[in-house]
Length: 101
Image 1 (cartoon, one colour):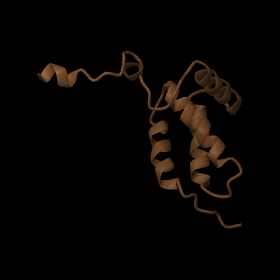
Image 2 (tube, one colour; image 1 turned 180 degrees about the vertical axis):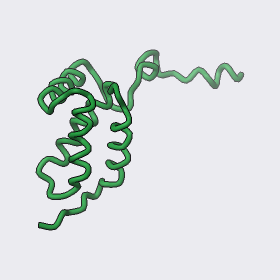
Image 3 (cartoon, helix red, strand yellow; image 1 turned 120 degrees about the horizontal axis):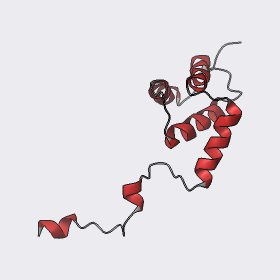
Image 4 (cartoon, helix red, strand yellow; image 1 turned 120 degrees about the vertical axis):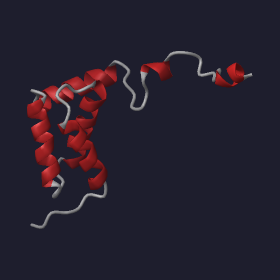
């Protein structure tokens, strides 16, 4: 059977290459890898991505069950993509304009 091309392959390839370079994953990395496993689960293609995702699990000393448990806990603790501590703390009022005065 011929492998299909996934429309997000090139974006995901870059992302997976970045994850391969991480010895210790951050919360966002764990969530991203779990998300990518779901995206490609059962997909008839991108076998190189799927193989590299399994390599990442081994690098991080995890299996799919542990990865999913950690990802669920991270989400349960309030993680939201693209949000870091500096963005969460404060009123959201931009004081830079008033400082330039």
